[in-house]
Structures are given as structure tokens and as C-alpha cells.
Image (cartoon, rainbow, N blue to C red; front, side, top):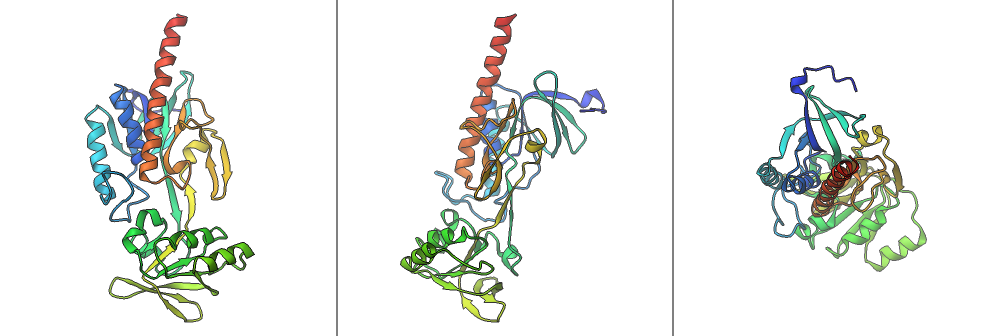
Length: 317
């Protein structure tokens, strides 16, 4: 990497954490408490920003995502972790078995190890009103929001053959579920049997949009003009991982039912020596509590990796 900037702007860290969500801050917490020098670079684009509350995190259930991140930043800063509101534009392995890292601000730093926790982007179907109501009454995960809308009339808009699974899952939270096939043409016979057994109604026809009255979702409108009264709608987005940094470094990806994701072992280690990944960058099912756990595990593993690298170097000398 051509670091053509003033050397005074250069700094070195044991680890640079790219992404400051639950996974990244948890990794930084583990490393900070291990007395490592850590830089967390975060662009301020959390996936769950549209949601007013997060759920399923023991002791933090119902907390706002913004408050959760602010608390996490204060905690890691208390251990000497540096936080930069910036974006990593490039990372390149160098001869020192570390990485040269460039930020959008022009700053260049060196990292002995990288932990990438850049998350993913939810790409929503082009249905009128879905993006505007996302995280409010247009939802994805019943574990995240099902309790808050329990026993209301649900709609599920199919976006792929996997949407049958979503329609069946949300029936745990409501006995009134309507599955809109939208642009899905056919379903396997087994899906029809399961939907019938779960009491899920099926509507054939393309969805034009959701109906909103007085800032409240009240129905699903089809392209033929029919309106089905609903109070909450579940939609499975297309998951696009923010993995450009990882793939540029040569990280291997595995094909999943949701598309390709960077392959990691149980500690978050990627196929690239010195690079770990955690959170939604490695898969779409990582909720906040899971991402925090994976990030912490990656941080602990990186600390041990650094420790043994130093010990072995001294033993060899």
C-alpha cells in the first residue's frame, strides 16, 4: 500500500476493529481488558438503526440500539480503546505479518491483526411503503419484534421460496396470518400442507404496497386493488454482506441459502492469516446478542494469537 501521507499521522495498533456494532465493540472490550492497543473504526451505519428498541439481549431487552451502542463505546473507551468515526477504505497485508490500513479521512495506521465486523445491508423488495415502515410495523425477525405485535393480524410478503419458513414461524405469535405469494409462482406440495396445518391463509397475487393510515399500517394492497386488513407485515429482505474489505484481502466465501458469506471458524478466523470476522458480516442470523458473543470470542482469540506469536518470537531469538 502506498501510504503517501505525513508519517506523523501514522500509528500502530495490536488490532484494528472495522465496525463498531455489538460484535466490534465486544471484540474491542475483550482486547482492551487484555491491555492491547485497539482502534475501532465505525462509519455509523448500524443495521438496526430503524428500530426503536432491540430485544432478546438479557439485561438489555427493550433498550434502544442507539443507547446500547453509546453505552458500549463508553465501556471500551474506559479500557483505552480508541474510537474513530471513519471508514476503512483499504487494508493490505505487509511484510511485518500485519496490515496497512487506510481510512477515508486519509489517516493511515498499522494493525497486527484485523477484526472485521461490518455487518450487512437489508435490501428490501420494491413494494410501496415497505422501506418507510421498516423496523416499525414492517418487520423481519419474529424473535426481535414478534412479542410487540403478538395476536395482531399478520401479513407475510413472499420474496423467495424461503418465505414459507417465515410465514410458518410467525404463526407462533398470531393465529391470524396471511401469506401473500407476491411474485413467487409456485410452492412445493409440502409447503402447502404445512401452511394449511398451521392455519396460514394464502393469497395469490402481486403486492403493490402497504396501506398506512394515521401513521399506522392497516393493510396490504394488491396490484388488482384488493386490500387485506393487516396490522403488521413480515418481509424477508435480500441480505448483502458488507464484505468488500474481506474479499479484497482474499477471504474465502461459502455459499449459503442466503447467498455467499465469508467463511469463518468457531472463533471467527477467516482463511486470511491475521484476519477475523464476526457478526452479520458472516451470516444473516446473528442477532445482537449472538454478534456480541462472536465478537468477544474473536477478541479473546486474537489476544491469544498475539501473545503466542510474541512468545514464540522471543523463544526463537
